[in-house]
Image (tube, rainbow, N blue to C red):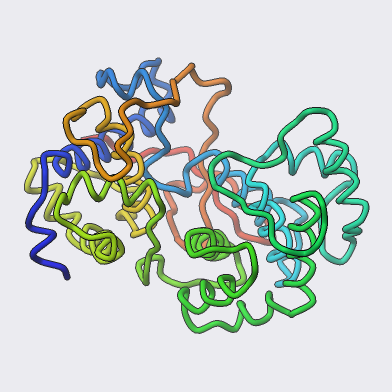
Length: 341
């Protein structure tokens, strides 16, 4: 653990823990049907921030509940891998639903990549974006003019290389990450994100606590919390924060229920550093960080749809009065919320 740099922290580090607790409480209050606003925090009221736990965000919920474990979805290794990577490359629910509207249920055995390419080209031709803005998605070098065409070629190469089988036989989450990182167009942060997404599925099951990769937003948040830390300290600091969370919440008198008892994982702490990077632009404008950004671009405009009861990978065993079990996958959904203390 990088003790010297961890010890030299700013006031933003205190805010990190208060932000985590209040943003999670907002999630639970909304699930309980409380009226908006779900917080007295004016910054949280005015701006949009992701949920504390990555799996509870809208896109991850769709990935788990519909793409990976949805009713009728095959749990064969190739099929789960293909669906997961195809969805995550674009990372946009609207793109997935537009594809299935045209081609029917997506599967590797029935996939026609040229037809899929045509459908994506048609969506773009209508002036619609097919990629989410959440990640920077460079075009892999496969000789096609369109980025989405190159991404389909990348996915085809993964399947031809029997990557799903290699990943299902991997001995660690880091090994999964290394397998993904070997492909053109997939950098360190993206390979880590894809590894986490595959780890939600039925084909692998590793502790999320194994390792972490810090993205650009997290680097900025870390630089605000730990002004003397070097960029090379980022992953060690995230791991240290995840390991010390109980102590840090207790030190500040914060009751943190976790996600139905599940503590923060390194991927969640990484995301929180990204979010505190944004939050602190208003709460601590005097602390600039390495990115030196001064305002939050994403304004909260109100929920467009009711929040759904969350679903989680069944292997996590987050069972709070299961109300529906989707055979044969065993996907559990919940209607009971932990009590807010």
